[in-house]
Each structure stands twice: as structure tokens, then as C-alpha cells.
Length: 487
Image 1 (tube, rainbow, N blue to C red):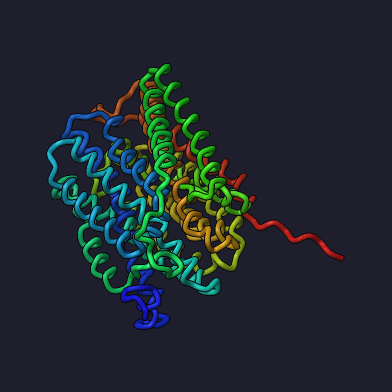
Image 2 (cartoon, helix red, strand yellow):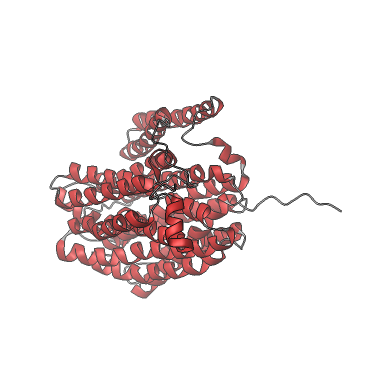
């Protein structure tokens, strides 16, 4: 007898429509997760003023979220195998909902930061699930269409989010940003009860026995990530001894993590990150691109709203309006590119996107206090179109041809490394910006902007452009090896 709520049960009830209904459900949850990761950037300047904290401390609202999301991604394969799709997904949505409400009503910065960390934990577990569904539930011929549908839907939330968020900050303050995830979480939980199976990936029953979580590996990954980010902060503050110590501990933790994962695999245990994934060259190169690209994407997502508000003196609602056309075009680009991501060479799509993204950063040097606003809109569009070529192509292309049993860990690993790059990117942008502002004799606490302030921002944008060009070297290697020539 078919277990009620299992994949087989839902497929028998909904037929071929089920995979699309399931993808729609997790898409809505992903929209909530991604919105929570980006929308708070609009409110950081106002939040720092209310709590009387500097930019360095305020950026932990973004960095803390990123650290939590990065590390929790590694637990997704274990959670799905242990509890199944539905329980794991519902638990994440409930945590994201609760944290959003708690953050919105908190009057203490530490509680706000704790709510952001909780949101990050939930968002991290959710992020790899759609890629697993697309690769496991859809045939190769349908993966491009599924990828296009999912990508367009997910991008609409952060595309519209900053515009709505900017208006909300002007009208009701930064607290209102926390509540934007509530309707998405409620809708997704209702749909999950109907369309998300109770089973684990592949349709087998969730193992409610004792599949072991690699706790030691998780602890090493967490320690390494925290030490890396804190080391960067200490480097900025001028405490070089503490910085070098923390970065050294981070490197040690990374090496220990890799050795431990290798030992886990040799002993027949389930490692947190299966190193056999990296024997697949497209995946190895794809994760390299994901890490470097994460630095640029999330660093710019943090930097651009701060630049527009504190560099050019625009209001939060004005910033949101300026970014809206770029977000909508990003969704449109993903809809088009996603359809071809399963039939066109991944390395060409990703490389073209990286070139556009690098160009959008480099051209920020032409912006000054007299620049017309339409120029900012065009530059934002250029960068977002570049993202539209990268986002739907990278994950699917890196894991194409991989053994099906490795797909859950592959989706988890590539998202982990992208977010690790993102967490480092947010910190690097904040640190580099504060440093260059000091060099040019300015500070973001000054009430008025200046040409020196814009020069400091320009230098950070140049760093991001260089990072994108560096990723090109690895992107070109994502192409599958050519078969041996036979006469």
C-alpha cells in the first residue's frame, strides 16, 4: 500500500502536474528566503542611526545572516534524508516566519541580529532544495523549462522587494522589512501540506531512525567561516595580530574539515561534503566560479544601496525605484536564458554573464554627483542582465552528468561555497569601503557626501570588477571534457 503523502502517492493523485506544483511550492518559499537575504540592505542606514552603531557593526545584520545561511546549507542532505521533504521544508518556513515577526518587534540590536541569524539558518536549508527537485523530478529535456520557471519566479521577489522595501522604510521604518516574508511563508506552508512529499529525495521513505549528522564537520565549517569573517573585521580595525590569528584558525579549520570529510568517507560514514563531487571537473570548476562570483554578487548587493543612499544622497524609496527596472529585466533574462541552460554550453553562458557584471562595476567610475539618474538605471540593468546569464546556468551546468545519488550533496556544496564567497564579499566590501574612506579623509557618519566619498566607493567597485574577471578563468573550464578522437 502506498504511504499517504509519499512521492508515489502524490504522483498518483496529481499525475505529471505534481512536479510543477511541488516546484511552485518551493519557489514561493525560496522567494521568502531570498527576499529576507537582500531586502534588509535598504534599511541598514536607518537601523544604524536608531541603534547608534557604526557601519562596521551594522553590516553584521547582513554578514550574520550570510554566515548562518552558508553553514546551514551543508545540513540540507542530512535533514532531507532524516525527516523527508515536507517536515524539513515546513520547519524552515516556520522558523523563517517566527524570526521575521520577532525581528520586526525587537527593540534591541542584539535581538534583531539573533532574528537575522535564525532567518539565515532557515534560508540556508531551503536554498539547495529546488535544484535537487529540478534535477531529480524533471527529465533532461524539461530541466531548462523548469529552471526558467523557477528562476523567473524567485527573482521577482528581490526585484520588487527593494522598491517596496524603500517605500516601507520611508513610511513605516526599517522594522516593516522583517514582516515582508510573512505572507510568502504562510502561502508556502499551506501549499507544502498539499504538494510536498513526506519522502526523501528519490521517493524513498525518510529514515526516521538514526542517520548520523556529521557534527564534527559542521563544527569545523562553522568555526572556519566565523574566524574568516572576524579576521577580516579585525584586519580593518588595525589589530593585525588578532586578524592573522583568526585567519590562521580559519585556514586550519578548512584543512581539518577536508581531512575529516575524507576520513568519514573512508570509514563508510556519510560526510557533510562528499569530496568525490570534485572529481567531476565541471562541478569542481563550477564551485570555484560560484565562490568568486558570490563575492561579487552579494558584495554588490550590500554595497549598491549604501552607495546610492550615503554616496549619492538618495532616499530609500528613490533607491528602490531606481533598482526596480533592473530587477524586472533580471527576471525576464532568467526566463529566456533558463530555457536554454540545458541545451547550450554552460561555460559560454556564465562567461558572458561575468563580463557584463564586471563591466557594470567598472562603469560606476563615470558616476558623480551630477550624473543623470537614467545612467544609474542603465548600469544596474547591465549588471542584472549579467546575473541573468549566470544564475540559471551555473548550478545545473556544474551538476549535469553527475551520478544521481550525489545530486543532493552537490546542490548543497555549490550553494555553500557560493554563500561562503558571499559572506566574505559583504565583509570585504564593508571593510574596504571604511579603509578607503579613511584614506580619503571622509566617513559615512558625515552628514553630507563628497567627491572623496565617491572615490572611495569607486575603488570598491573596481575590486568587484576584478573579482568577476578572475572568475572567468574558472568559468571557461566548466565545459565538459572532449571525448577522445577516433579515426
